[in-house]
Amino acid sequence: MSGWLYCGLVTDDVPDRNTASRATDRPGDASPFALGLLLRQAHWRAAAVMGEALRPLGIELRHFAVLIVLVNRGPTVQRDLATATGSDKAGIMRVVDDLERKGLAVRRSVPGDRRVRAVEITPRGLELFDAAHVAAEPLAERLVAELGPGEPEKLKDLLTRFAYRADDNE
Image (cartoon, rainbow, N blue to C red; front, side, top):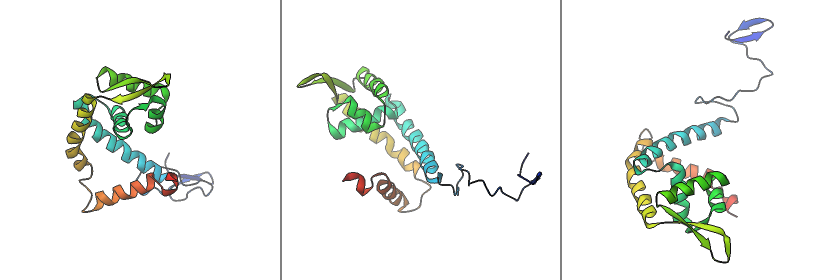
């Protein structure tokens, strides 16, 4: 049955006034969830494209996310890797296990606390990290191909300001 139920009749043009705008994932959605849904859709699209770049290198985006943290911060304890990548303890352990098996990272004891182990990128991991950037370049260009001149930079600027609000850094 399509349309709206109104006084026992089905009509196509009378919305229920007691019903809030329902969230959809369609462009132009006016619900309060619209921005989050668009960001989710954009993330899925970008993740699929970047996953395509990483696949020939034998890693997934979750592995690359850890390598990014290790390159930026140096040796990092697993608890901090989980926080930095938005993963849970079990998930980060699996990713680090994968990276160790592939020779891309190693766990080392932390001086002063033998219970804690820091994860460190290996030279092979650093080579793969650099190769991933080379592999991703043409795919990243394809990702923004439908945008006009200057729009990829504007989009990146807006997303950076949105994701890293000034008051979050204080």
